[in-house]
Image 1 (cartoon, rainbow, N blue to C red):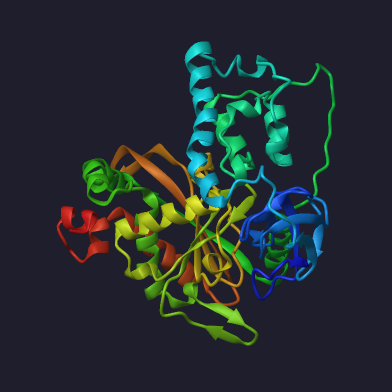
Image 2 (image 1 turned 120 degrees about the vertical axis):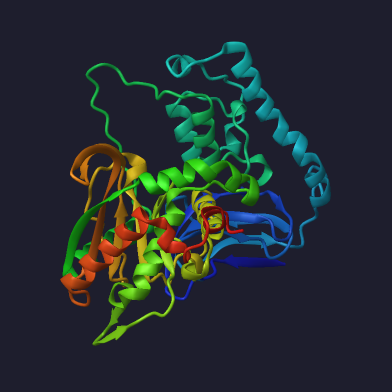
Length: 426
């Protein structure tokens, strides 16, 4: 009996997806629930699995093709007999740790014997007998660009397959330097935009065209927050198992300000304004496939450690392309941190249908005047972009001033509790 495998809808608003990677080949045996392919929608990456065990008779479509939901992408012959070479799933699981350990050992061995530096990483040569069939097309392109052999990479995909994330991690671990083209060469390449990138492009243009977006600026003295981090960072990590970053302080300050200036936390729906009595804060994250904005739900109720844990969880899932639609929809306000890339100042674009977004930037020591004296302080520029259709100048400026006040006087964020109690959550 032959069964057809169709692409399921990853979300209500998704009508088409892109084939990101085939994980099997025609003629291969697959067990029930084994992953067949990876797909990209405009918001998330997901796998399609085999509904029953059998032999792959046909795979329909090429990597990069955009296809409609419910399209047939594979045909499985369920009457075929399992070949002797196809080990049962339980045996494969037992053997997996051994298979995964070998590439890791190869990387360690190379690091110990060659002591390779970034300056020499690009001069290594490929071996001709390695198995490139276990490398995804995108990962293969990256490895070739940095002259890295698949045998040096630990594959985490199905059956030890090397994914794009595996390739990127290997490049970093080996200090890879891209192979340079000949002097004077003017190479070009074309790459099809992913659904995520196309959707992001459409939304950004729509926001610019459909909102009355303005940006107001202020600056904040980060010394009080930096002093708190320096004093409690080690104990915070020992207590909660997660680092103490700036994002938790900014999220908490924004939540307090959002409850006081409700228009900044609101959105427009037709000719109505929706006011939210909760703060679902979206955090902009740069993922391998583009910018994503996962949401911290009910952030106003979370302690510093709970915020940090949620930021870490969402950032990890974003890096691994595992965010679901439910994790990226429904935010009421966004925070973006261009400072991690060295940005001094920017005008962030609103994340529609939200009405406000706060931009954090890099911290620079600058001379400022305090009590009539010139002193050096670690300063950060803040930028609040907002939709002037719903947020007036008084509200936007007052919101940003309130955030500044809370960050420069962090004891105000914790109802007067002692420093150890308010930071450590004791």
